[in-house]
Image (tube, rainbow, N blue to C red; front, side, top):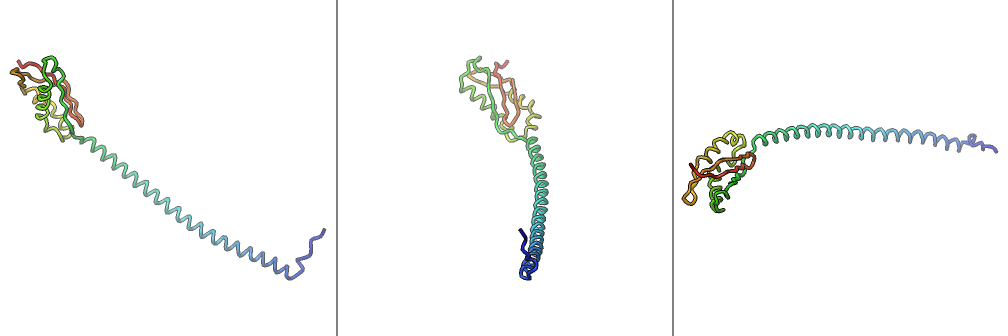
Length: 167
């Protein structure tokens, strides 16, 4: 078998030359278009990476600021509620109404501590104890006084009291 001698005919020579020239031109066009696309995508990637870096820095700033605000907020927590509980009312056979009135009276006496920051309340805890302990309570013609047994200071000021006869 033999390869036909197409390379001697001018029509075939023009066809092969056109194919080579067309291939070269199309390759140049492809390289140009690919280069333009690559340039465009590289610029987009660079822009996005700069944006990501800026956003990460901004996020870091926000997080640090948020932590600082939280730290300041924790430092300045305020008293929101006052709970008073008398623990030994059964010993003196006091009715629930009398106990409730005593608890409300104590709450009224120390109600100025509501909306104060915890540091101020902690510094004045001795004053709170003195206010509670120096107040005589009169129930059914008997005089009682209160003793502070436990005081927990957080957003809720919890005080446990014991009642005893006044001497």
